[in-house]
Image (cartoon, rainbow, N blue to C red; front, side, top):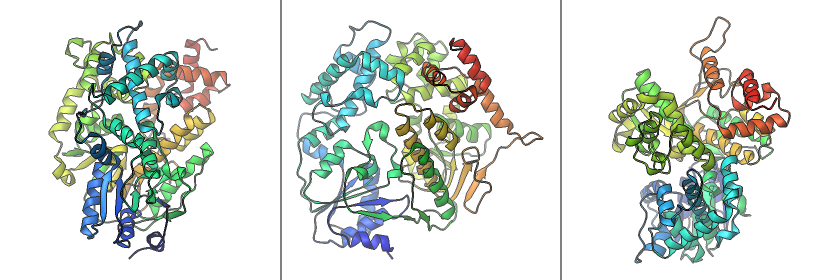
Length: 566
């Protein structure tokens, strides 16, 4: 039985866009939309291969045979790669590979060639995901969030742009294997005409500008579906396609996944966007009914937060005996560039002869590696460094134990606990969800937004969306840390508050105090120093700065003196 909102969509005509909240039955709606048009040739564009396979299964179950289900990349592959001499790079290009291919050994300065190569890699990704025809039409420096990395890119602007064009040309000529985003870019620039009457474009909030351009250039009736509040791939140069099209708008506002407790919490999180002075309204209702707990999951913001939680539950507290990591556990111990947590650990222990990754091996010590991270803004590598500093020599044993207790994909539902970052569990759902404690809080949104820091608004916007997506994966039970939602005073039937375990006689949170003390004396990165200098010079008080940097006022005063700012 369709809702009134679903019926309105099925009965619509012409180009439309659909704002669909989490768990609102958008696939069911699109299936019924297609069934109502049995004579038309329909293309369903899925966000990735996993979504494609799930959609194929659901459309087949309903007996809908006039819909072809593809990803933008699968369409591009058949048109651009198939039948040619192109070879595909199985994974992304690593920094040393790019430096070697382009001969970047003419730079002076420590690790300059590798830093330049890292920026070339990012610029290639930015261009391939854009809708522009030429590299020169893009302002690469403007999309770099890290101040130190941005300054480096500005200093080497012409060289990075020139070498980016050379690298793209080598792929175009087939001199080196091409990456997946490259053949999608070639497909977009070829202005393809797709032979369909209707195109259904799913997950529109996370599409690249190249994907959107392909979609908009078609003569077919266009239906774009998504949820603006689930946009979490801005770091991969995604654009919110729903905001880019001026089509009649329809809503799917009732979630069948969770009840009103979770819906209300989701609405509360999205309301934090008011601090950023951007639209924060969310129409959502929870119609789900809590059921039996078959799947339990921990969802974290970062790889680091997830590994720490897995180590805590499996090894330190021994609360679980088997685990499953969405997307394979190995992916959580490697950075995007290919360096493993073991490479970072060996460098940390002074055992450089055991480092396999060429880029990490080129570093003299951890200080050099962290300096490299500051100039490249490599967040994945920074996370590995954090885990190594946290656990040190215990890491090999911990990872070995996690792998021993890890179940295969076909046994996923039998795992005592499923572990996933938000990005890897996008589109999934679990009976019980526990949030790790590495998500943003409303207080941090307020503090950071008042600091007026350049690209901060887009970063904070996506951090809020990450928390919203994590919350809305839960079907029956949701456990949330109290420090993230201090305004939620008591647990409900579905919503459970994780309260501090240890308190003093006065009710003071000893664990939080321990963490604050640990944070207060953590090493300062040069990025934090630059930010501290900027905010201090703007007149921020030590107490205000303490909240922003999650340290004590005493630690702020000490650092100010160290930097001779007083």
